Length: 239
Image (tube, rainbow, N blue to C red; front, side, top):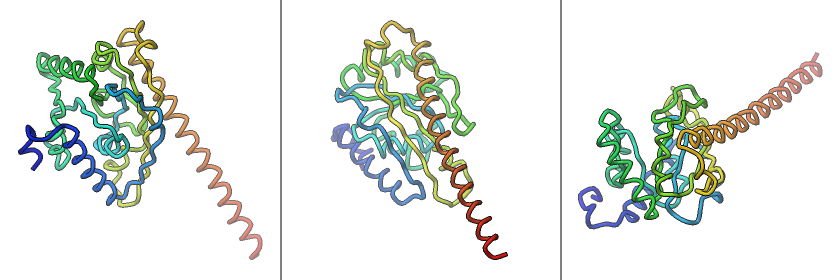
């Protein structure tokens, strides 16, 4: 119904409706969401949220954990995804046709204007999802032209294991993590070009992802060692 009356509702009202719907869907799913770093989000609205891209669940975990309204630049194919596409259209997310340069520039210009006016934006710097689990593709410098021109903060966001939600062919519960890193303010990046900013953000995210994965591997190793110790000792007791 919101799609039929877009002109009669505010963006905030539509975002609240869409967010509640997605959070309800998430609550019924087999995914356990672990969110960290919301306290790092800038108080001033109008910033770029820059996550690594693992798949369709990326959008759902952002709606789940980012309370403040945001828009996003998404590939046009997402507009046809069941349920999610309807929400994106309702929120008037900007669909990017990467084969149409003129239309893409128009989208970027609009996002820059809205960001400078205080609208938060999600843009995935990889441009497309990485299909290598918790690895990342090269970050594209063009992603950051909007925030550079708007002179707004950049919030790097690390997504971990989100790919498992739709890629793993299992009904077992899945744990997915989202980490909001400390923002990079304009004064910190104003002397860098877009390619340098892209590299800097990708390094920050890689460090966070690798650190969290190494902690998980260490925990798993210690658990298995403890488990094997218990088995060995129980066998000794019953010999």
